[in-house]
Amino acid sequence: KRMAMTDSDRMPVAAPSLRRPKYSIFLAIVLVAIAGAAVSMVDARSRGLLLNTFRLTAGALAIAVPIGAFLGIVLARTDVWGRRAAGVLVGSLLLVPQYLVAAAWQAGFGIEGWQTALQTGEIREPWLDGWRGAIWVHGCAGVPWVALFVGLAARAIPRPWEELALLDLSA
Image (cartoon, rainbow, N blue to C red):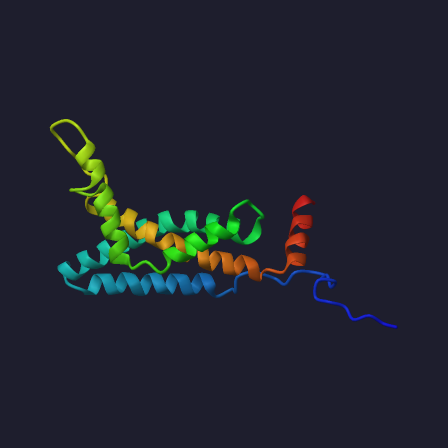
């Protein structure tokens, strides 16, 4: 009698090629040129607002991507203790509105926050004020989203491909 093979029994001969298409660098250059042309065509006020948007986005991404990618990989691909509880906690952060997140950070570390009120001395400088605060709050609000998408992507990679990549790495 012949037994049917399951997906876990099949080992691919080689992982599919994950190289970028040849046109991706060209596409990136074209997009940067279009963005540069758009910035140069608007008036000074709109240009300032657009550059501030890029500044906030770049800063928030610099915080959210490394932390969220680490959390996503740890929660999706490891067997650490408390992984399910941490996944529920990170997932619950997706349900909190952004204005509530901002208000919570402001109450703790803003101008009238608890940390600022506990400071002694004549000059009381809040930790989260201006650009620093906006970038930090937006970056922290983006961490669960990055963790979700990285975790889903990490779970979609078949185990045999991962083992094959580990074998290729050792050579």
